[in-house]
Image (tube, rainbow, N blue to C red; front, side, top):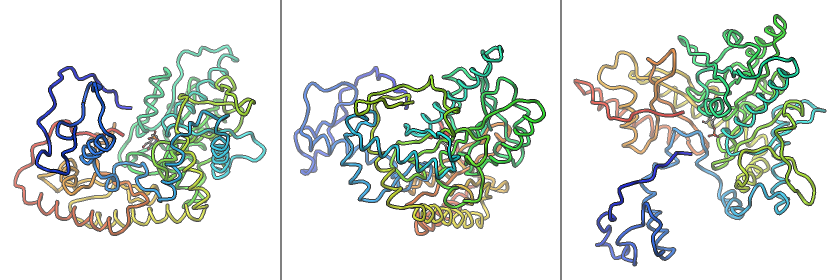
Length: 466
Ligand SMILES: Cc1ncc(COP(=O)(O)O)c(C=O)c1O
């Protein structure tokens, strides 16, 4: 959530708007909605709707938002189902047993999709996106490490978590909120994520786990989870240190199973203890639902689990929130049964095809060079070529916005701060036609910017938060 500050200077409302338009002349519409104080009196629902609807037109167009990983299009039937279930609270398991049942079915489907070992008590839950899932998975790692250390009579005051510097901000939050040292492996040369080569140098007896990302928010590349696990196996053989792995599959855990079935990144690797994903990314559900699944009962310490009443019985829960929308879980189940494995495969393959196609067309433009090509996540990053003198990636992003496209520009973290990238996330709903339009606009922008004979001034506040 953004943290919002109280506005201290309360101005009288801005001048009347739309006075001349008789369609917008209902009482209340001539002076707009209250901004910072709850108004003394309300207004008609149509008026409130119109005012807010109009103000929201100034938001970006979600379908042209190539910055977000989050679903921006669902089928009308899914929307209808979601609208019918807006009022379901996910925590009210006793009152909404069917919604609870659908959540349980989704956890089962995901755990099978991710090859949870048969005979193990695989456990999971829906969450508010991958961020809450990361908090829960991180806590389970921390609790397990603490139990191990206490049992060995070792101190428990300096836990650390090892990950590539490309991890999403949710892991930084986890470390700060739960007092865990963040051990970030920097980028180097053309290595933009964690690999097996460096990971063990960062691990010691205080390492609660390693986070491997499938795939990276920065450039859509998959981290080599199997290679990271193999390096940790060697570490265990050499030193006895047994470091568990959590896979942050926010995007990839809904992509790789369908289009890279032979890639071993999930519970097929014994070291992988837990996996999170965002149902609202390549799970194809509107925001915000996530999932986290633990390999077995041992991976999720019992003292993290709370118990709520369920049909007069006991329902174990593990969550940071209490109330949460149930309709996103319903929509997740809808997608599973509506698409089936083959439907998901086709959707993700289509996204990958459009991503690699678009990346290829951009690579053909002299002004750009690809960093990734969309062949892992359907996401690619590219940069402005070194020979381009008078504009940079931030300029391109700004000019694309004039055409309605939201394509973020951002610099990479240590040790590649010199690299400024643009990133395109291809999702269901972004087809070849739109891809061609994007490339055509890019060509026009490059043609225009190439005529500059000195660099553009840079506006303030540029930047992009992953
Ligand atoms: C790799 C990764 N992890 C975690 C997150 C956070 O996910 P959410 O927005 O579902 O909380 C993201 C979001 O982009 C991500 O890419």
